[in-house]
Image (cartoon, rainbow, N blue to C red; front, side, top):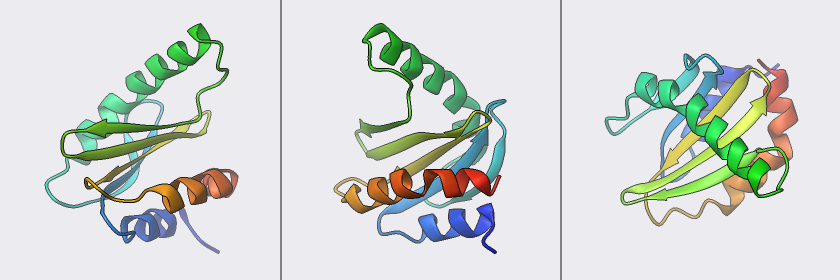
Length: 117
């Protein structure tokens, strides 16, 4: 049976991925795989409050519950997702990376990934 570590490792092997961090709602990393100088603990600590603000934005805009976002920065993208009530996911990718397949896989397998926690 697959573990959350197997999923994190598999996602981290995707083309252009610099980091995959599964984060508890307390801001502590549950599991991570990082490269290119990414600080998993700092990313984990910041993610819950960012998710809270995105959820508030969705509420204010009448969009419903927050599930996934793609954020664009000067040096790449961040895909953030709610796995379940207790866990979040962030995947940092390099610029110009096609994230379509990754987004599809996360949406399709979100429940299964959450079930591994």
